[in-house]
Length: 248
Length: 324
Image (tube, rainbow over all chains, first blue to last red):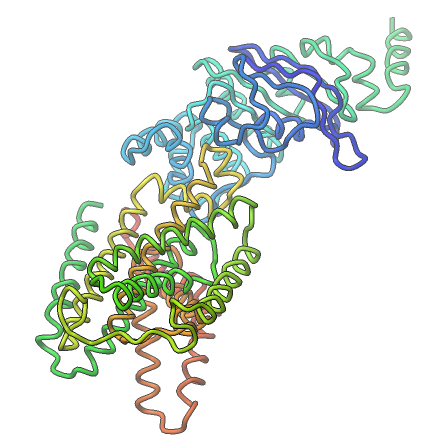
């Protein structure tokens, strides 16, 4: 569904994303993980049309989308959420979601019906008439999700929708994401909450310093020495293996 | 919800009927004249409101559309003998094209916020200087418009004629804003105002929407220009492209309430009302301006959402108003 090959982006002397390949297949939940500053959000920004890559190709459903504006990519069926939530602060939750719904219809009544349906799906019905700037962190994350979902995407890019949530809220949103996947939407997500990544994803890619260092099922990744070192520091993998040997 | 809507509709209808009847009730030409200017100012404010209030693109040069329209119809009238009832459509077109021109140059290169405000200010000044130096605008001498009252010339013998024309234009501008609030286009503009990146991510073509908005604002400003020229029968570069009209356009909107249907009308009533009352009752020259300025500071300082925001806050607090 989404094929990224040789994607690179540098800002001045800093290479944020370096020659990354990845592939998101239809109907699955794919994760993108890595330490802070690994280039995950930059990669998302390029895929969604917010940044122009220095090199590489991005194919969405076989079509080259490099150079297309974000609104065009959204119309094609791929939409992103923002890691730092970007609500339309002075609008109500309903009006916020309706902006997304207007992507597929010009009619107010249809947009409103779609927005209410999506609110139901993500569990925001009670907050529909609330101003977006009075929502809690969890509420804003859900609103990001709801607005994106209202554009009726086939591929949903979720950038850390669980950051800052408590464990109960995370369990709730994990359930919501699974339901979205079951409704036929492919999901590509950036996440730091490992429990959620393990629980949700069919496949995961790991970025570190802009380079793809591993790819595989969550279980494979958790045991990959390079991944362990990226997260825990040089020599950590050896230590852990040593510990394992000692226990055996 | 239904009852609140019909109540608002009833209020609007009552207001319109009252406005229609006023010239029959009020004998004073002076008051009708002041009311005409209030309506006219509200109309220009609405032009600014569509771009500044709804789309969040603050311009300091809203006058540029007004001046372009005024020159368009006045030159057509005085040089080519074309009546302003046709000229006003030329003015609307000229204002709209001017909007597209400035919009393309500004939005194409992503100018936002204060940069957009500055470039619109620069355009207004640019055209003021151009109008001052070329032949067909009459240069610094300006254009004198002959007074031969007739509907085709949009000139009237009694003040009520101008009043009704201003009322018609204001009602149309209110309807445009009302339509905007209920349409996808309006929702897109508001989304752009609140967060352009998020709007783009959700499929809003920000560039195109802003172009439409500035084109509508320009067309409205152009129509306002024709009205002004036919009422005051004189046009020169400082009138057509002077900063004071730009400031007035944004002031009435900000005082009344940015991005609201009735904001410019309420703001225009309050500001012009204060101005006239202060001028009438305060003897010392300049004192009225001080009072005017003081009240302005208070409103802008303490009512960030304008006077309409004050009503809305009250409505939200009132019990049972939640469903409204």
